[in-house]
Image 1 (cartoon, rainbow, N blue to C red):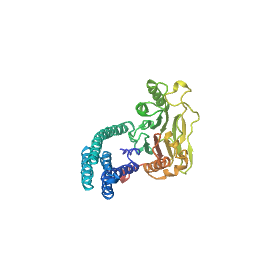
Image 2 (cartoon, rainbow, N blue to C red):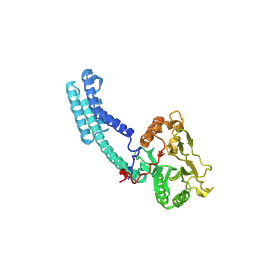
Image 3 (cartoon, one colour):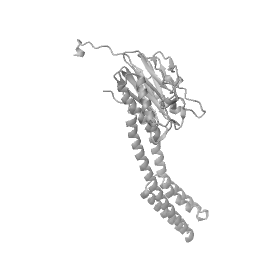
Image 4 (cartoon, rainbow, N blue to C red):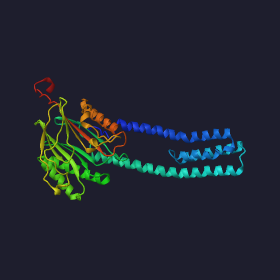
Length: 381
């Protein structure tokens, strides 16, 4: 049984680095209140009460609410209050100024404690949202098998919704009786409505891929499912593919989606452009008729990269699009997952910031046929 590969968008070294950077930031913020109070104490003790630095002691409990809870905020506030009283006595500060300073510290501490309560509540809500989103991600976008028939494959998904890790791009691989059937698509729009539409398309595809005899039948089922839900203002660009181990080709149907990138075993590349361009799924009423299937040679050593427009339309700070055709050398690793991860990292480096659109990539590799097993050999017994 094939072992599911990982979703690069969820389990990646980049996410680990973000966690490490977040931990370092949290540590710095935890130390900051005590550092501020120490600096104020030293400066006030050296310069005396004439400079009026003592009220700055309230900055300590103000910073405490950034990372700590109510208890920690109160401890920092109490520490600031004790230091303020000690400095007032040391500098023989007049009572009025001392009372004002202590009142300021007490007020800031109380406000910070209330702020920390609200922050903790929001953090719990965000953690719950992320947990639900990750479960939805695993249900909606299931990991693809490492191997299916004569192919090896890997998938990468990077969502523009950093908090939820889920968006409107979709993909699926189904091992059907007629061969391996694949879909990759992009739902127009974002948010929960896009996720609902993606779930509808994937559910229809998973059923139709097993039942229909050809890709046109599969796409017709998808169109019917979408027409029952969509209002005519929403659509889904998609590429459907079918690969049969007995045939040296891959059959494609393109519904207004970026053309798959074919990388030959000898290093040559080509974009598998359709002969006719038709509207995306969900816009069949606008005409013309659906796309005609077209074949692409797919022999041992060849690769086909299916992707969404979040890849080729990703821009750097200068506005230049991601040069996908110039980056095919990154897919040379023998492990499809490692190769696709290298390409994904390069895409993130090109953007050099949060992605503005979801980016899904599905890499298909045609592997060498396995030699027939001799039933008379000792290994076959």
